[in-house]
Length: 281
Image 1: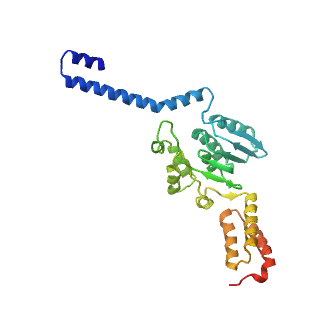
Image 2: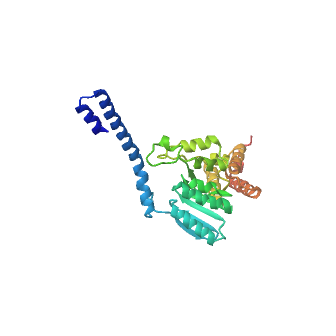
Image 3: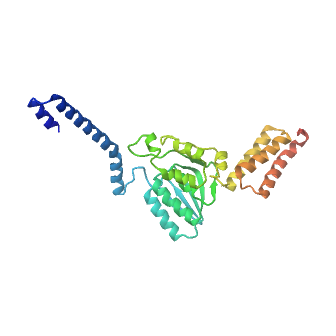
């Protein structure tokens, strides 16, 4: 079209039409180049995946330990395939533990679907973030270990800005909504830029029913820390003591009556040497 417009000018015809044609051609070419540049990362990634190499990193390792299957690392398509094979050949598995910073959303959805269908429990060891949260939240009973945390952020789409990426994966919204997370929680999770991460507090996760239970090891650790704090801080008023007991009940959820009695008894024993100094209200 540029050549035709140039010939038109050489022959002395309407210069306005020729210049307009050249300008439109240049704009169209630039737009095409810009559109192509957005797709270059997607094409490159698809090519690498086709040849069996995932550019996000090495796939997670999966290990069996009795009735527990542990996922350690990035969630990839290869991991999803291995996970399915292990579950099919190990019907004794009742729990999936995980330590992962995330990975492929579609692979996480495959694993989550299997967990949900088999009604398996899920356990976070240290951290479960990004796509890993889809897997954890698919568990029938969702458990936190010592130092566990969930990390959320919006989806990442190659060749798109953070704002454009937010609406690129409605599957994430559906997955979070499907387990009962509130709209406000989901909005904050998905509006967190992919380059950042949001770690909700334990209290927030408990209110959202994203976490159902804490492991006995975590309860014991928190209990021992509380007892140490009591001893370090000296005499406590009775109202402070009851707040400690209530706090344990609220933050662990699974502390049944016997465990609550055990916590109260241990705290009472720790107070015995200081009994003459306890202030009565």
